[in-house]
Amino acid sequence: MSVSPIPFSKPYLSGREFQYMEQAVRSGKISGDGLFTQKCHAFFEQELGFQKALLTSSGTDALEMAALLLDIQPGDEVLVPSYTFVSTANAFVLRGARIVFVDSTAEHPNLDVKQLEALITPRTRAIVPVHYAGMACDMDAILAVAARHNLAVVEDAAQAIDSFYRGRPLGSLGTLGAFSFHEAKNIIAGEGGLLTVNDPTLVRRADIIREKGTNRAAFFRGEVDKYTWLEPGSSFLPSDLTAAFLWAQLENMTCIQQRRHLLWQRYDAALRVPLAAQQVGLPVVPAYATNNAHMYYLTCRSLAERTALIAHLARQQVLLVFHYLSLHRSPFYAPYHDGRTLPWADYYTDHLVRLPLYYELAEADQDRIAEAILEFYDKWDTR
Ligand SMILES: *Cc1c(COP(=O)(O)O)cnc(C)c1O
Image 1 (cartoon, helix red, strand yellow):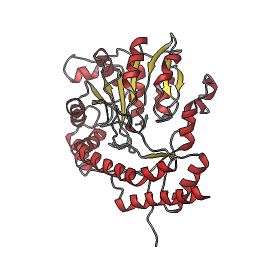
Image 2 (cartoon, helix red, strand yellow):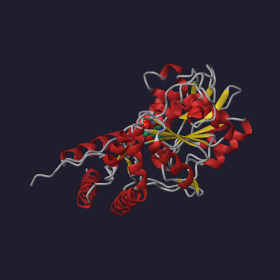
Image 3 (cartoon, helix red, strand yellow):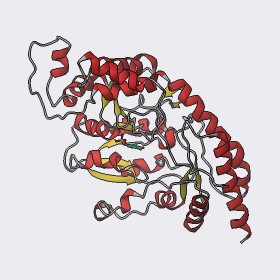
Image 4 (tube, protein in one colour):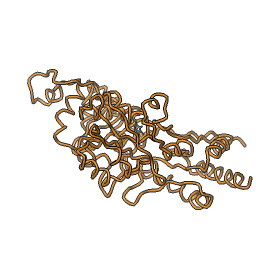
């Protein structure tokens, strides 16, 4: 019997994407900040409760906007987890910042808040917590350290749509928040992102930086009679075609999230008890956090075990993928790193593996994946 390959991820279309994109084209305005961008902004501000939401062309762009908004200067220091996507650090490196990498914890890939205080110097400007797998970092602890040292907090909430810290939406707790709508996230626009501005004193400049350093947004709102260059900026706003696509997704967010939660729980029901008995790591949702079903991952007991597990599933046409490589050991940053070992970041680099999780993953296929994993562990253990 031949089985069809199961990909790691598959973009889900809710059904209205083309209709809204056509509507945008026919409206005659497909550049940024059109009708659909306004709909998305209203959704984020009124439904999700963000003070100020600005669509960007990517999560990376939202992080780069954050670095510009905070006026990060050469030599400034920014605290970033080592186990993260490259953009978390890159956005600040582009401004000349020195990245001071923070280790993860034994329980969770999220950064270890207990290390923050000792890493702060007079040059430190910001902390950038990443809510890995959409699960909140310990934000009260991070905000307390930031307040004590007068630091900004930029939440990398790229994976964290529809997830909460003690009842408050991720992305609303720090000075700024960055979300991604890349096709591998829960809610997608191909490429797309969102900057949330939680400090009201930054809102005006956010509008300006996003529009090439000009007050063009204020001009289009009729607040000024011509627009002009006010400070350095770039073009961070997406086409309204992107926003039209995104709007079709946002309208269906509840349904998309329900399906992802169901699949996440099914993995957990099948795998947690037997794998925990074999000391394989499973996702831990901290008490203050929620799970937005972005990711189901395992932490294998060794790199050899992870490699063998991936190979075993590949033979059954199932694609499992590992994730980040510690940034402090990357070819680019290793020469600049201060030499501290970050054992937990390296641990997740070598041990963590992600299972396929996407809206259209059939339950029968998911059962096949879980069975193949359990079959692997039966044999691997008795070797
Ligand atoms: C996806 C992701 C990003 C980047 O988002 P893009 O939209 O792909 O630019 C940044 N940080 C984290 C943690 C991510 O998962």
